[in-house]
Length: 600
Image (tube, rainbow, N blue to C red; front, side, top):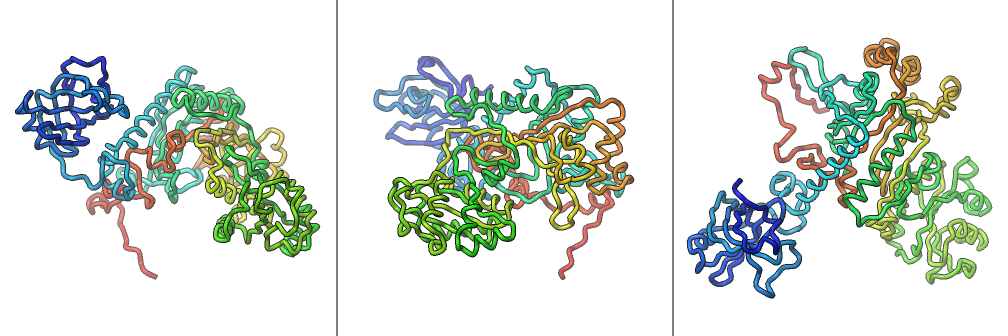
């Protein structure tokens, strides 16, 4: 090793010891004849001092050192002179008096500051990701990610799980998104697919009798990107045999609870994790992944709205629709511009319009509300009693703001869910130190495709239907619920899982409901159906997203901040300039010809 200690580990107990250090020049300061360098490595920063009266040659070397130069020094640990300590640094009470120094490599001036947390265009950061990762926040994020993954491995190992790697080159199967295809050179005209998840593979491992499996799995989906989505991502994939739904939920609750308490003991958690039924979740929060750190629940106002003279409400209710709303505490102080912004947010989430109702400007009991305090486009068409009835349904106070949407039940709830999330951010309602985990259960199994009218699965076709809903497979498919479950936290979905089908006849029936012919079933899933015919055990699993989990626990807003080399929002790798054209000889070997897209 070129160093005896890391920069970040030196403390008062090292005073008097001779040490050798190596790292990057974080800062350089000249104080008359003295030169001070803040030397940085992965473990931290320490000050090293060059005194020409102690080591003239080393001092001469230091005169040529600049930011991000890679250097090696040798010297003695000493106490910093009184009054010069830096108690913001763990090493701030000591310094190294350098006697020998060597520049191992020089550096150009970086395109952005490494030693300061300043705003930098993300594409520049991704192009020079190897420099971006030198910055303290990014380095700490990757170290924290390592700790999260190690905790998961240790946790599952202690509970009898074994880690098994599954193939990356597999067969293309429907998993809910587009596959990335890989052409085969040795099988011209045929393609592998990169796995969207190891779903079928882990089920086959249960058929194989492994009983408890996990892996830190790389997964690939060719889909549009957003802050919490990448074309390649990592998940904790696990599967268990001879279990039911409660076994999985208990395991995940124990994993996340112990992980937060161990790695982030200063944070708070909502315990035990609530179990929320999907239908109730949509009704109460307008989302299947609500942020539970604050209330602001959706309330049905249809019965009250039906008694008003407001045409918008009456027309919607007459057509079988609903009038629902949420209440923003203190929201009566919103400006006209802010109310217009909220109206646009509601429309962005599918609402045709938004009715706001300001309940006075001074906090107080709703009983003292008068009609002249009410500010709303609907004020002329409602009575004071009706306004108070609406307000009391939310337990509102004077100074609050009611936000009301009328329309079909589900779109109205979803629009209010989007509005609730936006208001939660505007009003800073969520405790940043709280992790509000919850499980969402009782999902519908099937939903209609809006374009084709065909049935599709809400999760995937390998999920077991609820026992009591099995008869509906032959009579009323829309009523079938799945033995599936999500784990959510602070407005994010962290994972989906389910109890799986282990009977080949039932599995084939699900495929038939989805419109597959017998030939298609055999071609795409024959291996699964055959495997189930050899004594498949009852089994189930779940696959928490590691990128999202680390993002959430690290307090970041994008998974790109916790991935070493992510793609940008256009799915491009700016460090390697990928994707890029293939060489002609490569395409020829693969029997592929690239044709230019014709302009219409």
